[in-house]
Amino acid sequence: MAETKDTRSQDTKKPLLIKRYASRRLYNTETSDYVTLEDIARFIREGREVQIIDLKSGDDLTRQYLLQIIAEHESRGESVLPIDVLTDLVRSYTSQASSIVPDFLAASFEMLRDGQSKMLENMTRANPLAAMPGMEAMRAQQKAFMKAMTGGFGGLAGTGPKKVADDEGAEDLDEIRKQLAELQAKLSKLGK
Image 1: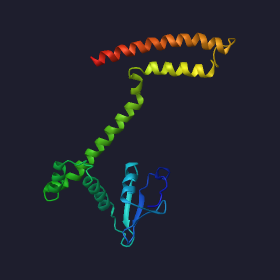
Image 2: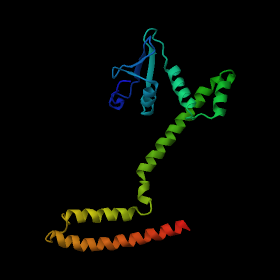
Image 3: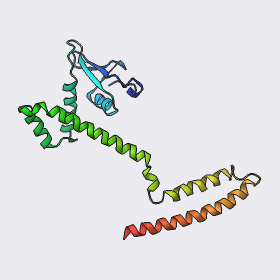
Image 4: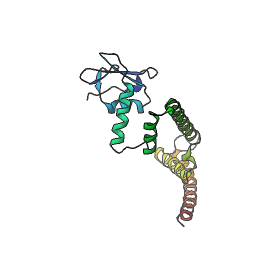
């Protein structure tokens, strides 16, 4: 497999066009190289829409290749689809329910995508690391370390770097000790 260029730099609004040659090799028209099913799966995981067409007939083969990617992952034990879902899918091909199944599946996956986006948005907005026990102590330690490393530069005007580092370092060290004691108390409570 030839190295592929980063597809994220390409226009992600239009589908990535993959052409299947008579030899069954798949050709990426953006990067001008051959790709594998795993490459196509990676493009899709990166959020890229993909369209696979047969070069000779012009037939759209996207559905066939997507099903093949799913089948390969399932056969390797990377099961995402429970047996019940697979069974229901097979049943839907032979029943009157087949007309509603695609709409239902599309709506379900849309809800899943929306839920994931909202969860990620909430996590980044309300930084969960800030609420973790000990994060304030770590921040204070980093601040004290940086002051020690820079000799207190950027401190109060008119005071020497050594004096600023000594005064603030002592205050920071006391604060760190206090926060460390609080953290140890919380950890001992969790251990009981």
